[in-house]
Image (tube, rainbow, N blue to C red; front, side, top):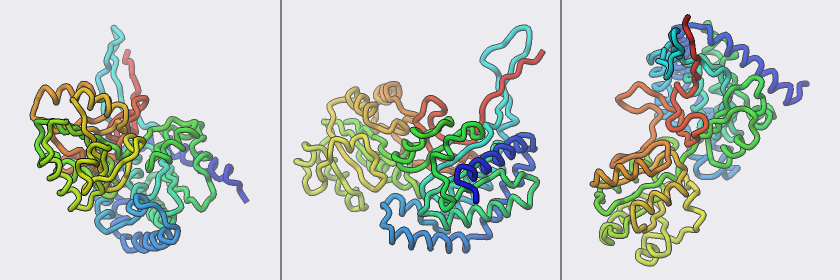
Amino acid sequence: MQSSSDRVLTIVRESHKAAIKLSQISGAKRRLGILAIADAMEGSFDAILEANTIDLEMSREMAISEPIADWLKLTPERLEMMVAILKRLSRSPDPTRRLINASYQLEPFQTYCQLMPLGTIALVYEAFPELAAIAAGMCLKTGNSLITRGCSSASNSNQTIASIIKQALSSTDLPINSIEIISADLGISVQELVTQDNHINLVIPYGRPSLVQQVAEKATVTVLKTTMGNCYLYWSQSGSLELTRQMIVDSHNGQPDAVNAIEKVLINHEVKSSLLQSLFSSLQQQGFKLRGDEILVEQFPDFLSLMKPEEWRRPYLTKTVAFRHIDSLSRAIRWINRYSSGHADSIVTESYQEGRQFVQGIDSALVYINVSPRFSRSPEGGGDVFLGMSNQKAYRQGLISVETFTTIKQVVQG
């Protein structure tokens, strides 16, 4: 019987071979592969939901945390969104055919750049059973192979989805090992997977900060950190109460994972108390748990509970929002840069100057002015698909799109 180290080595080797073949297969054939997975998923909702029901029953016995339970629960709507994302990916242009002007020219030759696949990508994730299929579509679109490793709480859902993907690939001209899904039941640890730097080119951890940090510390492969929650909003004295309320509420409506949820609000000290009370009352009625610093809790004991100092840098990942008074925009910028997750922070203001100061001062991947930062994997009105968000400057910062799964080859034409 193979040891876990032998099993993982076999998987990553076969996936690496598949990546080499995928890079030489046309975008048209890879498009058909994505469509085959989408059609297979669309015809298997009952089987997936049945497997997911077993996972949900087991998770209740294990008393898993609230965020994981929400992320784990599949619905017909979530499965329909997964299929829609796969179909959108199949229709979008092949990114690996894109040529880009080089930022320099080596005279007298012509220099240009071309987007190329990275190779083999590993996704380590908590719950989110449909994420394997979405990541599979993004990898096939870019000519990469994919290895996923989910958590034990979603083992039945993951195994069912894996079987559907494998069956769909068998009907195409794509290598069967293009998508490998490692079940938690195989006994292969996260560390065994993320240290296979001879065959894996990128690891993406997706889930709570503890998982992301675990992968980042153990990996010998390049890691693209994802992040969610602990996004900040600064409410200027000129900002609208209704817009502030709408941005907070809407940012929490991303399903199933409110990646860009506003969890911390810094309030300019000149904002009237009557406006604060109106906001707190409205949020409380909509099921939000509200927290605050000592000053605000003393003023609004019926709405706010006292928070601990360490909560300013920690995501809640639930419908919880904390509030704090602050003297000025410049102090708000310093506070946000110190404590936020650094991937999506917002401002409500009627001042163009304040908006520009916020944009220039905030050290985050995305900055929103008077608009909800709500995250969507498949935004309406566009052709893009996003896996998640990253605050990591060392590799790619911001929205994780199909281009994130590519690298640049520079060509000098003689």
